[in-house]
Length: 273
Ligand code: PAF
Image (cartoon, rainbow, N blue to C red; front, side):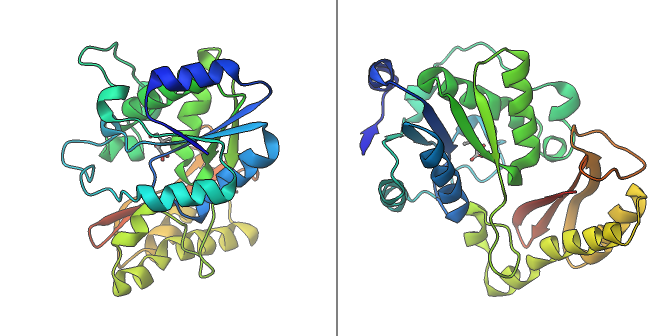
């Protein structure tokens, strides 16, 4: 497995690659969720490139950029075992110049849900993802459905900027008790780890009500909020898959989305209905 840290080296290697290229962009601190993206990429592509870069521009000044887990050695082991061909691990200076064009996520999508408590977050995500796309020119790029809003905003960028890349949405991977895997789960102490289950339980309670025939979006949101009562809820929303509010739930067109604080750790989860 090649480990590359400069854009120049990556571009030179990319020039020589034949066949399909699968890109798995990550911020490291890999878990089984990342592994499932890599596995899918491995099956579907001749070459698999993973990037490991804790992207500073997607963190707000008060957020956990410095604290964000960094485990490069373990990540590289995971990548080797999973059959990644090349890991791109640039420095901050390599990825960003002092003066750059502004890239903004669409206002309608970027300032709701995640963007409402993290304004500017998606601008940073698009900046880095576009750079990674330009450097690796992937055939397929793999993103988890757990970051559903991120996935949708990236799909929108690819479509509207006519980027010739197939975005592959990958299912959420959960612990056996239902907790969605996240690099931030390591911040949870024993008590918080139990409390964190409320997110997946809230989604389950909501989906059970939908299975029993409830279609009123507001009632389903209430069920989620009630199930999250011990946590500080950021949002618990029922939206269409293009992130619009709808009064009625339509099966196969809906996402249930939750963000809540467990202690100081902000977790997100969602369910595609
Ligand atoms: O989902 C993530 O880990 C990040 O937002 C991404 C897509 C790697 C961009 O930094």
